[in-house]
Image 1 (cartoon, helix red, strand yellow):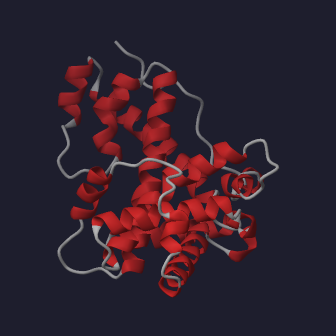
Image 2: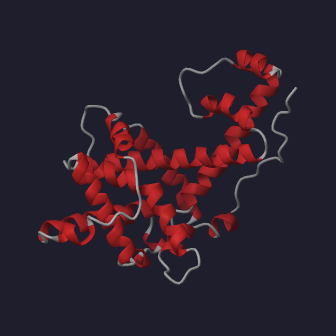
Image 3: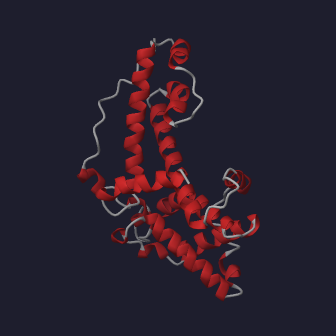
Amino acid sequence: MPDTESSQPITPPSRARFATTHWTVVLAAGSPDSSRYREALETLCRTYWFPLYAYLRRQGYSTHDAEDQTQAFLAHTLEKHDLVRADPNRGRFRSFLLSMLKHFVADQRDHAHAKKRGGDKKPLSFDVAEAEARYGLEPSRQLSPDVLFEKSWALTILNQTMVRLKAETSRRGKQDLFEHLKSHLAGQTHTIPYRDLAAELRMTEGAVKVAVHRFRARYRELLREEIAQTVSNSTDVEDEIRTLFAALAS
């Protein structure tokens, strides 16, 4: 019978631990001399492009124009080293990034050929069809572009957290267990009963419940780590969690 996640007990991240993760990717991306510069830039772009795209779509841009504007903004940001201005003391990274996008769009309106300067350069490739599918999942009632940006940001953070948890369990040879139990971590309304999972996994129902509890605990820890990288100090983490979950309920 498979074991039930024989990991060490999970303890809450300490204040000192958060201090080492504040804006780490952002700060590395903003420092051209950093050895992690290119890697950090790619991480930022691949992680946060969709909230930017969703914001532009809700502003009224077409699929094609939203893609071009997102690519142009990312290219401009990377070329001009705009992330050098990213300062953890200014608060949340999502607010900083959205503010930069708004200024970029306003500047584009003032310069007829601004798009030509950056729109043809694509710092990363992303699946526009997938983006439209995700965008189409939003309810027909109109959320404001800012609220949709926050909701998309929250979903991105949750997805990144799940990806990290899946990678961890895969390295530990627990991927099959994770795949069976992940619906219980994601808060899905229709999940397989524990007794049926236990039979399928050849575990006791109690062992399945313990495994789910441990996965949830690790998920919460990873979620806090993800959020800690985008806020100015550890005291902001809980407030950011509340803000993002409120956005999800929009």
